[in-house]
Amino acid sequence: MSEQNIQNRTASLWEKITSYCTPARIAASFSDFGRVFTDLPKNAVASFKELRNVRSICGMALLLALSVVINQFSFYVGPVKIGVGSLITAMLGCFYGPVAGAFAAGVGDIVKYVIRPDGAFFFGYTLNAMLGGMLYGIFFYKMRVTILRTVSAKLIINLAVNALLGTLWYSMLYGKGFMAIIEARLLANLTKIPVESIVLLILLPALIAVIKKAKLKI
Image (cartoon, rainbow, N blue to C red; front, side, top):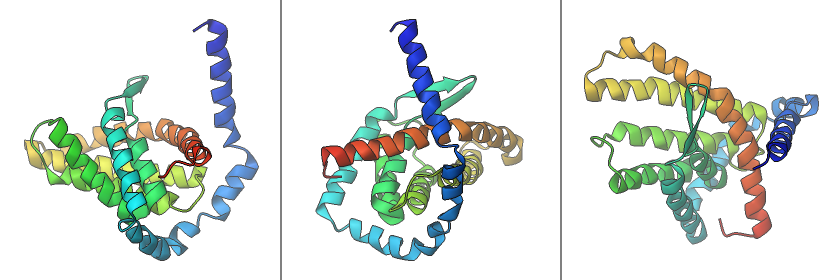
């Protein structure tokens, strides 16, 4: 790839990022944020019904198969490693809601462990995956992907689920002192939030648009 093409792509990416920071976009993020809570009961019911929909089950299976592949990829921003596997979890929550998203994310975690075991199996990490699918479903199911929803979802997932619960499971598994490692893990997950939020803001709406345009059965 030529230097000019790299510069053009970088400029295009930067333009895409700054487009989410306009006053109108930020105001819109706050104006309809309350729907996350007011629409939750009916969205939870609708999400539960997704588990009885054959097309939804097939779509979840397709995304889970994709997650097995995409989970192997990551990139670095400075010393911070950013995984892209969470994008599939976000798509599960976005397309199928908090109930079905949690169920599918849990199944996906177990499948990935069976295919590629990494240490001893511990249900706590499967619970983390389920909570991630549930939280993405709460913030994105039947709603627009906005700055405030994205950052809020990443804050809760990274700090409460990945850092706090993840550290608790690690401490229980390997006998490490919780307080001795929680500070470093909180900091590591906190530093990932800006980049992971930008990745979601750019890729999730783009993937939704591609799927709708292609009329895929997801």
